[in-house]
Length: 100
Image (cartoon, rainbow, N blue to C red):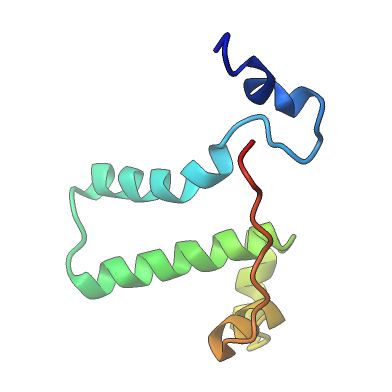
């Protein structure tokens, strides 16, 4: 930490750097919690469905759409543009941050 102090504390001077990597860990954590509670998925299809649902919710959250609103839009048949763009291959890739 002494050698990389500037990089470790960069979040204090650059508002674009998150305080934690919690956002990257959150999707994996849900899979582990699900496995811990039920022990396993009943089939591969159940696992794929669960991961698609979690991916959809995480994507909506990243775009400022709450869970309730995302579910409501799906029930009403109003698929968010971010989903239709991703399915059609027209989604714009997000800019990646360069490590310092």
